[in-house]
Image (cartoon, rainbow, N blue to C red; front, side, top):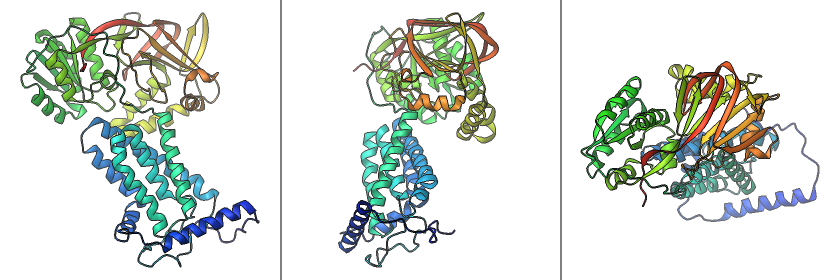
Length: 495
């Protein structure tokens, strides 16, 4: 590796304010080098080396994910996403924009100095940016985990001055950039803050102290073994049926024939299938979050098996709205979202690649393939006029803090479809990103948002894809999206 400080580049001319700030920065560095930091000598240099290439933060994220709590896993994923964005920005822009040499090591005691000195430019500090990005991302999703990670992140940032690797201003700028990266990630993928949804309208549901009468169908592909064990502990007389994804629908139909309460454990697609069966048989539904995102369960207020077990034992339940789409003889329901345009194409491409390269890489490949296509995936007639659309999104209930991924709902029985559209035009990928950064879509002329109880589309081209809770089907001609107000009874703790 060669250093990226080009010594042949002439130094910039004199600038009074800049020169004073740089001189102050050097004095602060020398002052820090002269201080005795109690207990730091055996810790900070090792901590600084451990943070090389993000190793420390990947290990921390793995430890958080091993706790097996949904919020910890989300916090770990958000922390790593924030770190990745910060590292990308540092390496592509930061280091090459301000080509500042590293500090001289003469004032720094030899025992503090790193054995292998960095050779990249000094401003800003990549270690500090990664530490701040990871800690801020974690704290935005889980303040409790953020409080655990923050002291470690602060120590890593301070270690860069302690070991003589950076000036104080390098560390401050890196930390600010890292925190900004975490907030940028939150803008794209909103956090699921711990807000308690309204406990209304309450519903009558059987109280099953030991779970007798509850039949839970478990999708084994969701990796739910730990949740099944927890379910047996919470409701020992509940019947648990484990099956492969292809058998979920059939097993749910069988379970509905003998259950007082229908239960399901899996991701949003599995829960969608269970909701359709529960509606048809007039049964209350108990949802165990068992997928990757679990939007419906979390918006409902059920984050783990213990919460659900308490609700089933005490007979605590609410009624929620259900969304429905109708296209000729084809119809289906959705508990979370229904969309046409670019998102169903992303889902189809992701499913096509996931078996070959895995879920997350498949999502990246799908996004690249779909977003680079300079065409409009949806043509529909709205208000009697044809419109090219890049995306039409309909949420079952009003979503807050929308980004590239939906935010969260605080009322699952508000009687509204939350409809968002991204209009057609040139460079649709940039329009979609602009929609995410703009916040509320109504702030941009390329986007629109409205809350309605029913939406009717005409002139939908044959072969158009429609996604409902992650499941994809083809529609054409006339498509109607509508609400079934308070149609489904679901368990959730009310206290």
